[in-house]
Length: 392
Image (cartoon, rainbow, N blue to C red; front, side, top):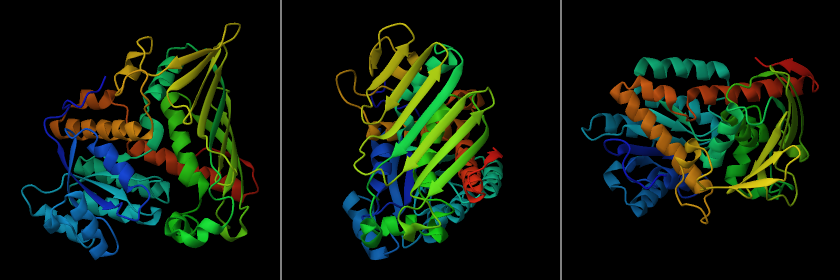
């Protein structure tokens, strides 16, 4: 169980690019990083494209005004000259800026924690992966709910063979907040998400399905996709060529089949993410609308609900438990676990502790590469008329 005691020698000196007053995800990053004040300290930032607004916001967060910068270039240059300069930076900006900011951060000697999808193309990710290796730096990706302890319980149940041979994978990440075009007209955050120049080649495939795809890979680390078929729609015509709804069929290398539904036009839906894994002996199902419960169904036996925080769960699940049974854990705690895992990876990299790095489970640059490859293959299939394509 986690109780806030330090797991690394000292907090990492941490900064942010983006994530300011008007941003949708900045607070999630800060609540995740700062939940354990033994892991990170926020010391510098370039919060906003409006420098005055960014400085005002940073001062209200308690950051020294002299370390609130007009842009990331100024921040990286100034912090490199300080003995107490930044060690790691989070990038919470629109998709189209991730590549250039990540590259600049690595060249400035910084570790990086970046929003998803990581970049526009897998070629860009491979280039940055090689740069990160050359600089001996970590690049982490914030797949929000992937830090929830019950996902590690699911991983333990799958990898131990408790479910038998995996046959069916059913994934969903949907909501209805874009069921009309009203939000497109008033929300700056939504406007860029449906602009291909800023968002990249997809909307809900990149914004939503990359989360659930990574979570499925986390739960089933040895399951690889052989081929897929993607059918995508723009039910709000102004969003074309980007989709607001998509369904993906998957064939796995072991013979299993899968489906994924991503949508922002599922009117009235508040369930968001659902993951169901069906094996030859049993099935498990988790949804973020009931994050503290894991449904476990063994053929021929009564249905079971496994509750978070209980001693009957696997050690890899309870190792990241924070609140204990009876007390709800959700997205904020998941972000905190992701940030703590990445902090431990950064610390291990700095100390040359390769044995710890080999055992840590966290969304690193390989997870970011898989997410971009997922988008590329889905878009390739959809743009060819919803045909089966080899997963490349």
